[in-house]
Image (tube, rainbow, N blue to C red):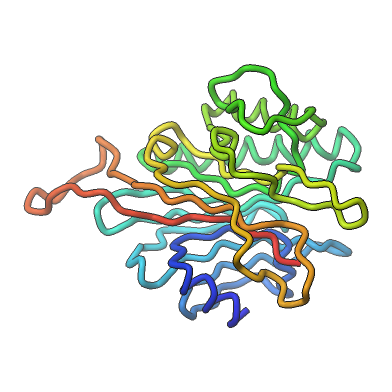
Length: 257
């Protein structure tokens, strides 16, 4: 974990959502990043995490865990901008339809709850969706690098539509995010989801292969990274003597193995 901490620091990453973190206990650790940890479930390789860089000078307002595959953190930045960051890990494609639908129903409930309690916060979700979103036209899903949809993709699309969230990397030719172990086939199944305002602030989006997430010589998931300008919500109380300015935030998601 210390090696990842330093790697992410040198890459100037402000907020990270990790899946398959495999932490043994629920809790928080502070280093170069403040790390919110979720323990794995029984017999599970899950355990999502959210990392917040200390030098971002952001304030962690609250954080909570729905289960081993879903957590969120409310973060306020020095310029008055604020966002809910969620780390999510959907069931695999091999799961039955009921399991997949149940997970995304839980995700929908979480989004509704945190929005009700943090109305002026942007929503940004890092999700290993195990999802291929297909090619059906939608304002929330771009037309770059499309692939045939699967069940996870159909259900994730409904979450996007209901919550007016954008699958940010579908608007960029960023490349695949996952490689199959035996066949070597590569797909985009990991996504950064965001509200409209946050998506409009994205100035750079890429799938990065320059960071070693495992230190074991084998990576199946690649790090998904975005640079975004976050502005205060118009309804956020402002300090009159302080000018409004964007907060440059580099967010990313990773799936260590």
